[in-house]
Length: 226
Image 1: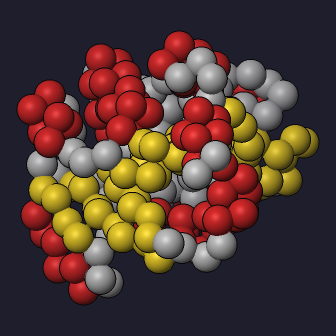
Image 2: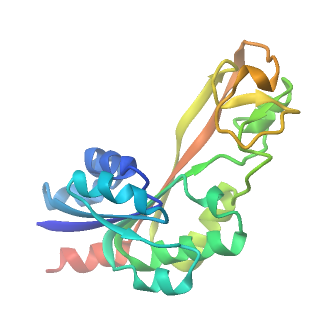
């Protein structure tokens, strides 16, 4: 069986490689279909990534996902991947348009991976703030919270199966994704020039990235009947 995958904001195709390695874990209901062959398309605004993608045996589409016309040109596929892309889009309207595009064009499922913009002091940035620290992206980028993403998913595909899981955690302040709270930077990595920070084990692990898996129950049911 052959299945198709479209990766939005693909860059070097890292998310495609992760999906191919873990697809049965990400979407366990699809494991009943055996081990499929995947036809993959990476989508990016930067033409420079074409060689990387085609060199790995993937197809490549170059275009701006903020453009309605370009989103309309994207093909339907069994799976859509939207990994660490939303915060780069900046505009809430663009973020919701891309989210809805993936949900509407994916026949079987969508894998979202999103930077954490959660502010709570249980497993979010609030744990860092209490130590005079923050996520390196939290002041220079913006994105939907997990609750906002899941609400949009439920509104767009009310019958779909939805699963939210922590993807990556920060356990100590030496982590390069942790910067002093008063730092002004758009870098995703800590550098000494940003000023000193205390190195310590965090009292609670902080979730820095979330995985959201959306599986289309309607398509799954139709497949079972064939």
